[in-house]
Length: 127
Image 1 (cartoon, one colour):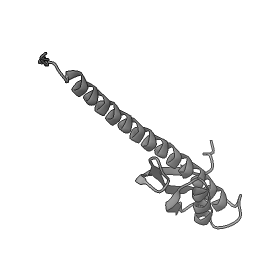
Image 2: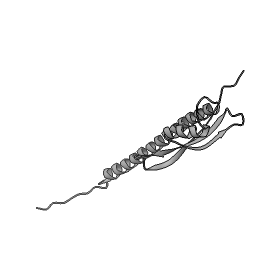
Image 3: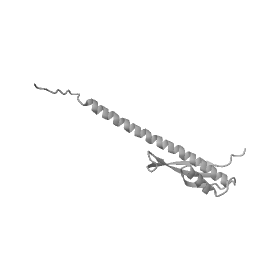
């Protein structure tokens, strides 16, 4: 009794196609996760900068105790950021700050980027 094995030209093609599709899917998933992490970091940086600028402006106007930039640094740190720059305007009522927030993927120790937020705060204009 003899057995013969016939292989067609398409033998293994579905395996190659499946591996290719899984690879493309994993790549797209990684790209989406990275985009989400950077977007979330940008939102966090903007929020931390807004709050830090408000704290600095309120302190400069005498509504809070302490030094304006020191208060801004504390508020930025409480929101997961680091104060990079703090400027109080010549009139002593307006503050400009720059805050950076680390962007991590999968682990807090794996920092891939630092998102930066900028904000300006002061009293409303008088009409």
